[in-house]
Length: 117
Figure 1 (cartoon, rainbow, N blue to C red):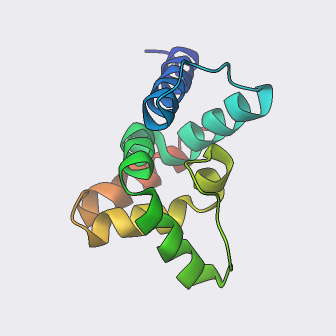
Figure 2: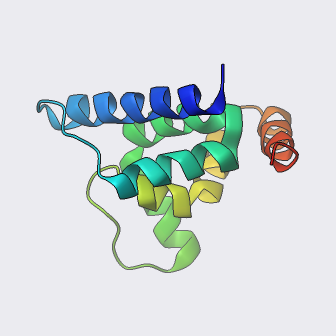
């Protein structure tokens, strides 16, 4: 599958998950959101879809962990792709901590994307 197809599938996946999360109809993604999804894919590779699902299922826990790590006083109240992109390292670490993904698998996936440029 080409990267473009993977990115489009990932954008559709985010859009669908957001609609389910909010209990609303699908909303069109902004060009900025599409770009952020592309960046997330390029930076996390095969972990990107699992990372998105993790964000939707564990948003409060992820934002609490992010606030603890960064010292932020507040975070978005619902999943936000830009926030996930910025704090993907916290999300991946939390996924490992919660045993959602194996530490070695996470390291390998993140290492591989460095060589795909």
